[in-house]
Image (cartoon, rainbow, N blue to C red; front, top):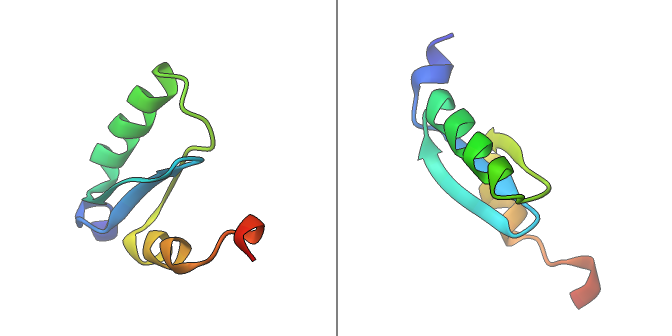
Length: 62
C-alpha cells in the first residue's frame, strides 16, 4: 500500500500523458476531472510506463 502514496503515478489519455509524478489519490482525482471534461482513453499507470509510451513512435508515423 505504500506505493500508492509515492509520487510515481501518471494519468494518460488519447491525447498523451496528462500528468506524472502524482500519488495515486491525486491521479484518481485528475482522472475523474478529465472524465467530466469528456477526455477519452484515460488510464492510471506508473511514471515509468508513461515514459515508455512517450518514447514509442505512433504506428501512423512509421
